Length: 134
Image 1 (cartoon, one colour):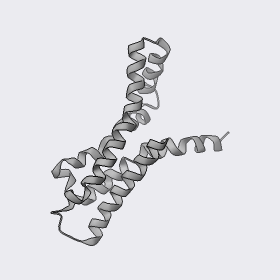
Image 2: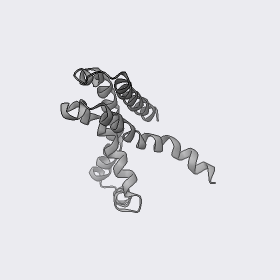
Image 3: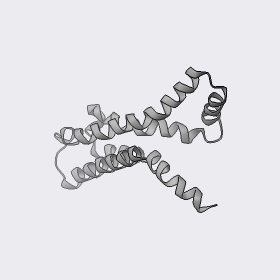
Image 4: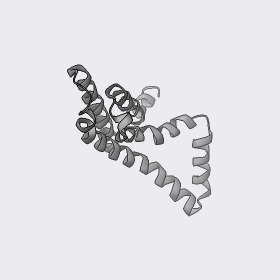
């Protein structure tokens, strides 16, 4: 949960820095250098956020636990497959900003920061949402 909060904050700050660069209306020659520390923090927190479910999958398959393997097969082939797929892929999107053609566009980086926040928001708000309907 702490890692989700860190990733949420890092991506929102990265988006805010990108929007600040747009509002300041400077030329985009130094934008990539300006945004690089934010990209590193958001990227590392995204890697750590993705690493946890991947390690669970690896341990389930390596140990040969039949029920765990079936649970993961159901997660990625069941009706909510898109939630689990996005929770693995979206936190890694800020790493695309390391590439200069993508990282030099402030509006694109602001959008990537907002999109990569979706799984962290779901992890933080889902328990409160489901407890509301009990």
